[in-house]
Amino acid sequence: FVDASDRHAAMVTTDGVVYTWGEGGPELGQGDDRPRERPRELLMLSGQKCVQVSCARSSTLFLMADGSVWATGKGPHLGLGPCSGGVGTHFPLHVTQLASKRVTLMSAGAEHVLLVTDKHNVFAMGSNEHGQLGLSAAGGGGGVMQQLNHSSSGAAAAAATPRPEGGGAGRGK
Image (cartoon, rainbow, N blue to C red; front, side, top):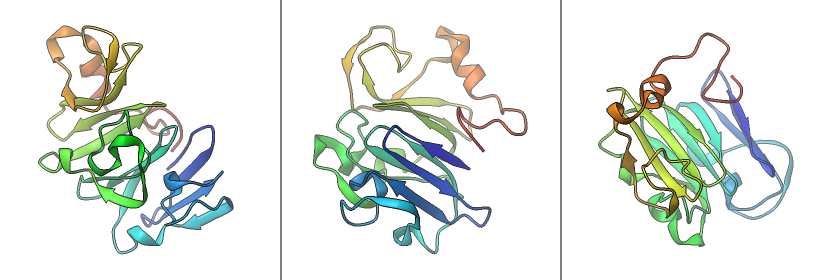
């Protein structure tokens, strides 16, 4: 699986090993702000099996085989616990807001993320400035995890439906 933002990229090997590269900054999760011109293994996640990565503008999310989600970078609009507030983190941290959920699929936009659980619930986190969280009112929103109401739109049911082989959450597999 591979994903990219406008400034960085991440990939997962078939063995669940994560590599990041790009402009540099906390979103690479490499412990510093140095740019990486070539893919570099993310040693902070070694020993854990990653199954999906998703790159937002200034952060990277990692979906682990156990359904937990980890994140690195700046996430003032993503509501990613320790990533909130714009300070950022240079190494992956567990997204504690999702600790009681088993996530099976995720997709990040510039400043938001949608997540699907094993119970086919869809959660949205981040900025809702343009209505991208699927909530009733567009506006800054931000931060707080919201469960999308299945009855309010067919979008939640569509997002929970598995994609055909070769189709990822929105970019590449």
